[in-house]
Image (cartoon, rainbow, N blue to C red):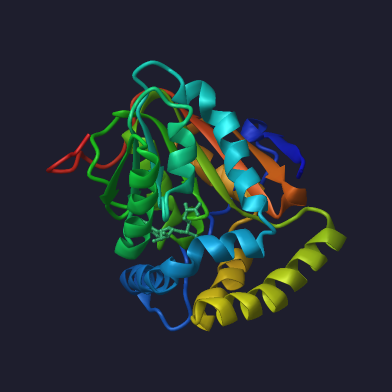
Length: 278
Ligand SMILES: C[S@@+](CC[C@H](N)C(=O)[O-])C[C@H]1O[C@@H](n2cnc3c(N)ncnc32)[C@H](O)[C@@H]1O
């Protein structure tokens, strides 16, 4: 099993204060609207093979990454009356894992309909208390300060605007609530980083493209990881968005990182949506 190495509490400010890149930039997409549309379309094309390829390309370690995330947030999920939302839930694996730890219905949202259809199939098969809804993570139909836990696994990297994504996560959390971002990262060890890059840039796109029939999707994956902020930068961006007690754990040598942040006090963000569902 993979080990987790803590990146520590970065609240002491050991990292640079530069802004993170704005958001994902798929080749050929101009602006945030086109980037989001491209991402939604791409996941729609691979949804039917998504789970199979996830497990295959990660050698099944993706299950461990999600299980680790649930372990780190379960003290929140287990609170009586706690409300949890898994953003960019895709085919629902993290929402389902959270539901097993939660006393309440867990919410799952995504903006890609075919991914949600796949999630719904699993939810129904397991009779799980997961309520799914279709929504852009940058514009959630959720009231300010109404949730205790917001998670996102391998979805944050795909947002068209990272700062807006963090602001939206912060907005919907009530005081004492927690955000958890599980995402690919840059291994700190140079040798392992080189091996990981070789796998991600050469082998993974080849297998992924072949099996899914959507080579552009699996060419996008390593590119999006390459452009994504390193763990200390993402931690700093979380602090700028108003999160406190920000920390991160490297998993599998830093190929993946889990960032955690706590929301204290009232959010100072955009106003509530007109038709909140929560
Ligand atoms: C790599 S998948 C991850 C799915 C799932 N969380 C998992 O752990 O397997 C990324 C998901 O993020 C969703 N996504 C990307 N950008 C989004 C956005 N702006 N709003 C909602 N969902 C988004 C995609 O539709 C896709 O289902």
